[in-house]
Structure formats: structure tokens, C-alpha cells
Image 1 (cartoon, one colour):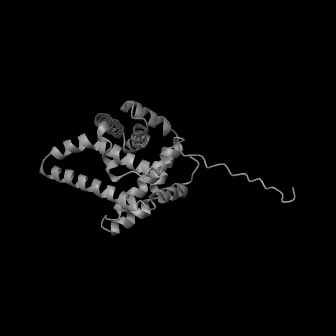
Image 2 (tube, rainbow, N blue to C red):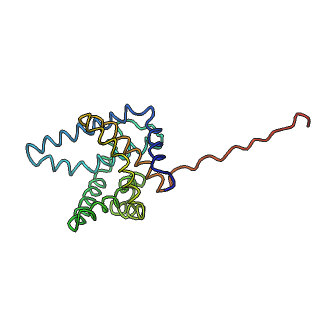
Image 3 (cartoon, rainbow, N blue to C red):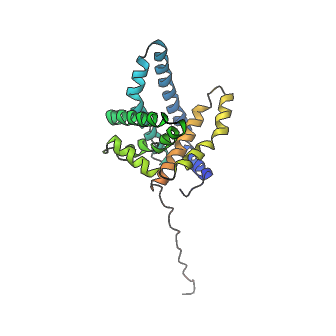
Length: 212
């Protein structure tokens, strides 16, 4: 990773410039869906079943929307549902990541956290490579995050101050903070995966002498 943490956050702010409305709208829709599922959990365990079933597809859709936003592809808000055509792959990916992370957490909490960071790029990889299997996405994420888990952890820590401020707003501020964090993560993925475009070569100007 060549960009500093502040540079990654700057890239995210540039990506969100002029796009805050639909970014916040996408998060609001997601929060409403989560609230409905949470409400079902209060009534029965049916909410947990729904959460398990749709969690992968929703996560893939959110990753798709914000990754396309980071890449200046001007996605529509409905892209947060774009994971459903890949429903079973997204479901299996969600299930496998949950199982592997829980198994590591049975040892200690810290190995579980490390595992979560190890698998953190799997949805991005599946988005860019829809033809691969969930296990392959996990394997590639492990390879991609080798030596970079600490960098992503520290990147997340740089948002702590904003998270504390969001508490003062009774959580409403998270509608803006969440897109900021997710788009920053998208730029992080693009950089470590080598997808960040190289800056254009400087233009060489040739000056013609008026006396020639």
C-alpha cells in the first residue's frame, strides 16, 4: 500500500463529493432493512433465519455500490440489491466467513479478529470475479491481506473520533460516517489489488521558435 491513511480518506471524500445524497440514501435503506429484521428477532427466531439468508446478498450489493462509487462509475442506489442475482454464492460466502471466524474465536478473541480481517476482501473479490467460487474468494482474500491486516486495522482506528461524534447525534451521524468508511475501504481494496489506475504521464510540450 503506497497511499497514506489520510490519502485514502481524501480519495473517499473526493468520490463522495456530489454523491453524498445517494450514499446516505443507500445506507438509510440498509438501516431500515436491518431494523425490520431486528424487529422480527424480537418476535421470534425467524429474523435470524432471514438475516442469515439475505445477509450475504445485501453485503455483496453494498460492496458493489460503494466500490462502483469509488471508481466513479455513477451507480444508482438500487445497486445495493445487485448481490441477489448471485444469491447462493453470496449466501455461501457469508456462511463460510461466519463459520471460519467463529472457529478462530473459539481459540481466543484476537485470532477471531485477525481472521475477520483476513477474509475482509472476499466480497470485493467476488464482485470483481463473479465466476469464482466462495472458497476461492476467501483464499484470494487471505493472499491479498497477507501482511496488510494491520494496515486495515489502523485505517479503521483513524475513524474512531468520528464514531464518537456520531454517538452525540444519537446514531444519525452514522448515515454519513458509514459511507465514508466503506468508500475508504473500497479505495484500500483497489490499491492493494493493483486496480488503482496509474496517474497519467506528464504531457510533453514542444515549443516552435517563431524565428524558424
